Image (cartoon, rainbow, N blue to C red; front, side, top):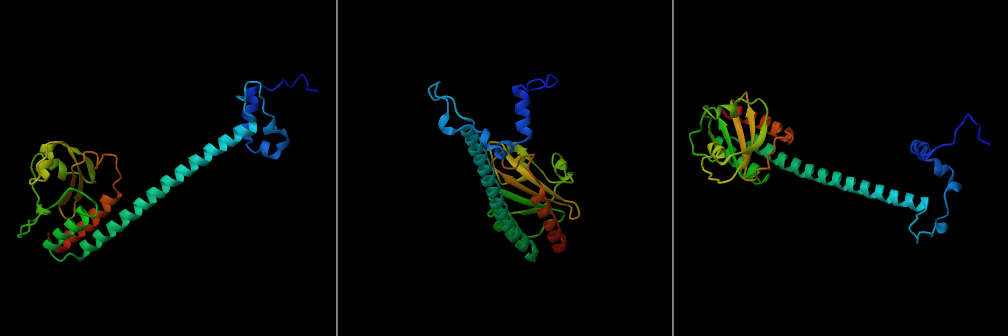
Length: 223
């Protein structure tokens, strides 16, 4: 008999107990109802506890499979990014002139990473006509671009985009990643016609690493 000092458990108390002792029914399987003896009084609408647990477990397994698939997709994307970054890094390390630097940016930055435009603004303009290496210009509204200490990303209006990439004519907003290189007094601008490609909240690990490697290349080339 239940003592008068121990009032009957209500449904919430039982639910709390089971939530804190998830293996209780595993240790006491005799308490589970027989799946074959489910109540048919509601036309089969009442599902046994065992059946309900099977549904919950299937849902959990599906959620875990989806999370695993997402993690695998991220890992594959990271592998591709690393492979492309490795090729770009080696090309920058091997560049022996401004012309070879220009080629490296074309072949391994624009093509490999599928960007639309890229220009490296340097302190001293190279004499040869290059597509992706140009003299740094410090005047409004450019000054705000060169004053940043860390990489920045975000949308640009068409007229702002044209200031960075004079050879490009756009009629719609685009996006730009700006990578400053303090020691080399240089800035790398990477542009995309997609206004969401370089979002303000995107990670900067790749851009920071690229800036570090490119900065050393510019110093070595005297740019």
